[in-house]
Image 1 (cartoon, rainbow, N blue to C red):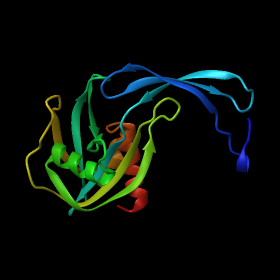
Image 2 (image 1 turned 90 degrees about the horizontal axis):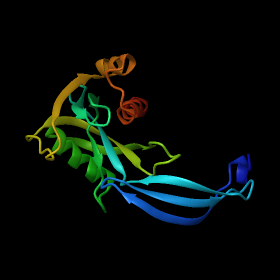
Image 3 (image 1 turned 120 degrees about the vertical axis):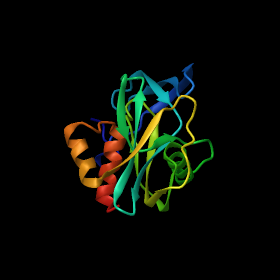
Length: 186
């Protein structure tokens, strides 16, 4: 492996970048880049999409606000933390509070970013900011998009851990967000 400063791999020189296909929530671009080790030029297809947020909202009773929804890619219902894309110019905190309110009708206190996940940096650009919210409480009805059909529920931390262990919660973002919240003490 070609090593740069402090033994880390060196950056590849990008020679060209071309947008290929646009699919509404992401587009594909092809990058041509030169290997710092071999000098050979390679092509890489990259899925470019807006960054997102996911929210670990806990109630005063210590329960975690979760959502269940049908996911078309896998043709199944999943249990996840409330999540969504950030609008252009929107901060992670503002996006997280908006998504929590829209998907669940909940609001809370002391929102803070506790981490940032890179879903699959080998071919995707998306970063998902994990936001913790305390004292979550339902303050309004949900405000779902036309294509959303969501069931809101709360589960104890112990039940959430059990669901992760037994496969009831499998979405990478939800599992990672719940783990970050545990490590952060939220």
